Amino acid sequence: MKHLTKLIITIVTGVLALLFEFVFHQASLAFGIIVITGSIMALSMLVEMIQTLKSGRYGVDILAITAIVATLAVGEYWASLMILIMLTGGDSLEDYAAKRANKELKSLLDNSPQKAHQLVDGTLLDISAEKVKVDDELVVKPGEIVPVDGVVIKGSSTVDESSLTGESRPVNKKQGDPLMSGSINGDSSITMKAEKSAADSQYQTIVKLVKESEAQPAHFVRMADRYAIPFTITAYVIASVAWFVSKDPTRFAEVLVVASPCPLILAAPIALVAGMSRSSRNGIVVKTGTTLEKMAETQSVAFDKTGTITQGALSVAQIVPESGISKEELLVLAASAEQESSHILARSLLAYKGTPKKLKEVSDLAEVTSSGVKAIIEGKEIRVGKPAFVSHQKIEKIVDQTTIYISQDEVFLGYITFTDTIRPEAKKTMEELRKLNVNHLLMVTGDHQIVADTIAKDVGITEVYAECLPQDKIDVLKKIPASNRPVIMVGDGVNDAPSLAIADVGIAMGAHGATAASETADAVILKDDLEKVSTAVKISKDTMKIAKQSVLIGILICTILMLIASTGIIPALFGAVLQEVVDTVSILSSLRAKND
Image (cartoon, rainbow, N blue to C red; front, side, top):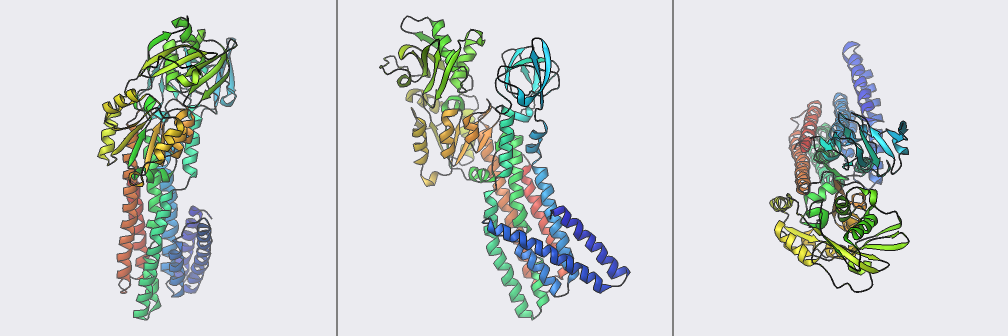
């Protein structure tokens, strides 16, 4: 039975009972209809409580059930009705508050791309977004939603990406600029080339994350249930002692009436949903309430370097050919092999190369995690990546900066170096984390030790692990002692996916689209801004503080009211009204977690 339906039935019962009692002077009928409704509701709650117990959680509804039965047993049927109204009203308010707090997450679903205009031989064909294929040319008209991830090939416009990144300012897009599905085109038509299908595009990835965040249970609810065990025992002890001392069973009912379980049932989950909503508004998708709880207790944060602490747009510094190949030929081979990779170095290489018209056709393309890519180009195997990966022969020219090496059929052709620009917000992020009492900061990267040490020093990180393979990163995270846990891992790219999965909390820099990193992570930062890491930790700490405050405030008020009710000062009917006051205070306190 839905909460709103229960509330309506209870209100109708109350109206009928009032008519029978005070209009038709049939007190027995009023008592009877309330007993029937109360019994049905109590039975329904008992079934729900049993289901809760089967799922491994302790249910506190037993207090409410006992209070309803006790008030009916001692003839306080109006108090029983008031408890029913307040309880079903509180449940309905919980539904409303949860929906309201979750509004920002659900708004993503409202703008889901549905259609696309495919350009075929100069003719526009309307097709569903799901039918778009990679390399299709599409026209996005003014005010329309970009259907899939792609790149502008004709025209220019401003695009609203606020539902994806949290950035309210429109972004200018011209030829060669990337487009994310779910963003809204401005005043000019643009022609784009699809780089991903609808299912693999940024928007559908975010929708998937949202659905996961809604489906996952919140661990802190189980913490609230652990509060409920001593609270329930305390309520029964106070009620039983009051009955024993007064020799009046009514006293037992009066105590249980004010023993409201709603601070425990409602406060924690509402605060968590509100905190997840606040995170979403700030461009951070948090998948579960458990993630919020762990981030609030974070002691360590480990960062990947390339694409995480450094900017998402490295620039080519040097092209150094060997074996008689020209710089242009070396660049074309490397860019051709890297053209489908999502790694930051691949994006930087292609950006330097410019238009992909001169790239060579590749086949049998494979990305080897933390090593590089290999592909067949014009019948020859081209490898791009680390020295040991591209050739079994020892490469003498090893450069102490971010570098990719290129080989053809394992013959070393040369290397390309990149300048590694630190994100302007990186140092501030480390300072903010320390202000939040997260003092154990480390860098875990596959890059050279000298490069890693230099960048770590510039941003304020003292603990550096360089030249790490994915397994090495996992080993580093596993060795972090319990005193420095929970640990957050922040990364970008396929090679970070294993370490994001093994960390207590994995945070992916997902601004560049769907990758294994964002799929594996517990939270995804949609805007290309490292400072969102400290923002996520702050929001989590605020949320858990408010959740615990709301629960404990509710328990304290209830306990005081129970002690007062044990003296007989609070009649059962008035106690039922006070119960809802406590519920309202707890819910409003929890909703504070939604505010920035």
